[in-house]
Structures are given as structure tokens and as C-alpha cells.
Amino acid sequence: MKLITIINKASENIRKIKYADFVILLYAFLIMPLMAGCFSEIKSTQKEQSVYKGIDHSNAGVTTDNKSMYFNRSKGSEVNVYLREIAATNEIALTYDSNENICVRGCSFGTDILFSSNKSGTFRVYKMSFENTAPVDILRNQSYNFLDAAFSKNGQFIVFSAIDRSDANYSQICMSDANGENFKIITSTETLKRKPTVSADNNLVMFQKKVNGYWGLYYVDLAAADKVEKEFLVETNLDAFDPEFLASNAQSVSGMEELIYMHGRTGSSVRMERAYLNSKAVNVVKNFSTYYYFNQPAVSNDGKTVLFLQKPISGSRFDVWKTTLGGYSFTQLTN
Image (spheres, rainbow, N blue to C red):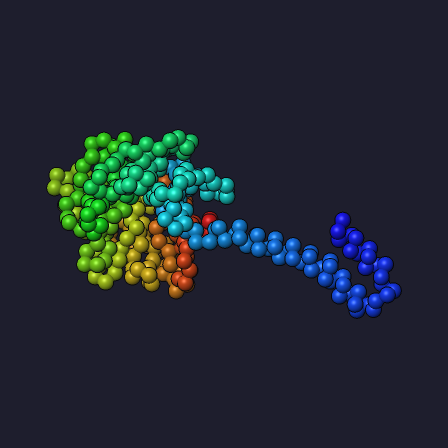
């Protein structure tokens, strides 16, 4: 009503003032208040959008039915686990608190998912269902942080990293039953080891180990009595990291243990590679780029989808992308 009154009064006095004066009056009493409202709305929208600044993604993996993906979304020290269909955009938060709730590639089997959380002080391994049942801690120890928990390909046991809380540069790779029982250490060298993955036949465990400042890929044979840490890919001045064994249905040659991993100089010329355990032949899935940095490849059980993380070299956050084992097409899934 106030704006209408102003307009009416201005109209009655048109004959008494010059046209230019009327324009100024109209601008002052009508246009400026409307513009102020618009600017106020824009500022409000910008404030809402700013909530999403600084959000990062990590640890994406594919569920065993090959249809959905899980991943971490983080903002500052708050990290939560999300689930969504690969072909859709709707998603659900499996965890939703201010702690670090960290999943990894290979951490789901059937409708179950594993993640590590520091909600109780130390990092424990929790297990829950995609139906969002209450998580239960199945692995805990006051002297170690348990991270990188992943299922075997048959879902009967899990592997994980046990990091010494008094020395973060020391860890061992461990295994237990799927419910956290029958815990045992399967490595022996005193160095930092992370991100274990289980072979298709469930007999081998590969992991990345830091030696002389660089990551290399090593594995142990669970059927062997000595548990020797054997070298797969170790090079001077180059890193090999983020290994994942392919499931049997994803392998190019049946019965040949195949894996995907990152290889190169971290932060610059890194590429995504595929190789057989007992072969020197290497297939490049995604070559290094001068514009983007990428890591953490994860392959679906049917071999049709490869998820990975990518960000611009000058950027501050990763998004989840997908491609194929042949690296023929690339699609961004989160934004």
C-alpha cells in the first residue's frame, strides 16, 4: 500500500514539477526500494551457496551389485559417508555427525558397509547396513587407529591398517573375520603401510608401503607360512599407490590376478595403470595431465565402471568421476 500511495501522490503533482524531477522522484521512492530488495535476495542466495564452499570428496567405491556408489564428503574436519545410485543424483547420508567417518574402496559387501570413525577418540572400525541401521564398532584398540577397512572378495574376512597412535609413521596390515573376531597381523616390517586390498581368489593382500620416502606396492600370500612382504612395484623417486585388485568378473583373463593402481611422481606426472600380478605388461587407463590431478581408482565387480577422484591442478577440492577400464569416456558424478 505504501508504494501505491507514493505513486499516486507523484501522479497528482506531475504538472507541478518538471519531467526530469519526476523521474528522480520515481527512482528514489519506487525503483531503489525494489532494487534493494533484489540485492538483499541475491546476498541471501550467495550466503546459502557459500555453505557448500570447501566441500571435498574422497574414497569412492562401487557396491557389489554394481549399481550404486559410496563416498566421503568432507568439510573441514567433518567427514561423512554418502550413498547414491551411479545413474542418479539423489543420495542419502549414512553418517551425519561432526566426526571423521571414513570409508574406503572395497568397504562394502552385499548391504553391509565398513567405515572408520574417531567418534570415541581413537579410530574404530564400524559396520552398518545400507538400510541405515545403527553402526556397531567391531574393531577397537586404545593403542592403534584402525583405518582402510575393506572386505575380501567373498565377504568372509576384512583387511585393514593398524596405525600406532604413538608413532604415525608405523603401522601393520591386519585381518579379521567379517564381524571383527580372530584379529591377526599379517605384515612384519616396521614402516608405514596403508590401503590393503584382497585378490579375486582371496589368497593375496596387496598394500602400499613407504620406503625411503616413496610409496611402493607390496603383497603377502595368506596361504604361505612366512607372510613375506613381496615387491610388486617399487621404484626409486616414483610412487606407486592406491592399489585395488579386480574381482574375477572384471579381469581381462580368467584366473589371472589383475589390479589397478596409481603410478608416477605424486603431484605431477601420475597415471592410472592396470597390470597382472605376474606380468610386466602395463595398460594405461588414464594418462597424466598437466591440468588435472587424479587418484583412488575403484572398479566395479563387473568391470564396467571405474570411479576415481579428480581436481584441477590449481583447485582445492576433488570430485568423483567415472570411466571404463579402457579409459574411453569420462563423466563427472559429483559437483
